[in-house]
Length: 401
Image: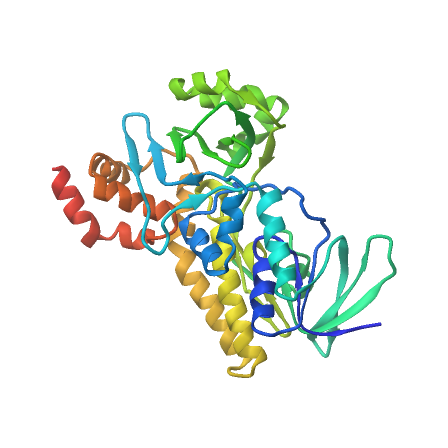
């Protein structure tokens, strides 16, 4: 038996559940499927920068996140060795950050989608897309232990991550790719308070970071260039601790704390994919991905869910043509994330900053307004293009001189 939906969303985490929820809130009939069950974990930085938190507030979901006991993050620190830049990125629209466990956040998002009227099917595997005359018109798949079913929809949305089945099935065009640059591992420690800080330690060819999450735990992540991945994979803990030892004060605190879970590792490449075509769309990592060093993934997914849902609403309601509405979605996404995409790749290389950038960072240090502005860049509030413009840097450099 098959059913007719306005939209089928494949993938129910940080991009898929919000997209489905927002479409359902506009009155559309939506099916949301995922191979996983919830709660379940996934590799993640956990960090929801203030723009992502503002999205949760718009959706009425911030209070449930706060109620899980996840501590707020209001200070961003960047320890470069000779000096530290410490700023507060808060704006009235985006006042604070959080880093909830994905077992917590993703479950809340799935529940919100169901609460909006989305039909949610967990443990559902998509076997193929259904095409008619070159257009995607549905999916074929099965639940756990169940027989195959075909479901039809006006549009199928791939929110199924970096290795998107939907993107592969439609042959989504990729552009502006970047190779894997950084290999990193993370785990969780008890007895290691960060007191509301998003902390980053940057050293030549090495870097690590830490921030608080649920259950009085602190996530600590350490990385090295991807070209060294094989050399370190057989003794992750030794390489991890050697990296943290580059900041002796923090290393002493870490060694006095207790690691509560295993190490989890990842290395990701960067890419853009054309996020739409005949009967299909992509959102979140399925459509665009950059290195995790700036921890932008969740806030990016939330923003793109809003953009994609708004574009699909225009198309499904016939207010605009599908290509015009989704073309604007792609253009808006690319223009917004382009400068951060390039800056993230520069950071992920773990190469020493070029001399000009070193001078800028040194000038920012100690200038509280400039440090707050730099924190807003990493928080995804201010575009790097705006911050590093001659108009903005001129007064900062003059004040330092």
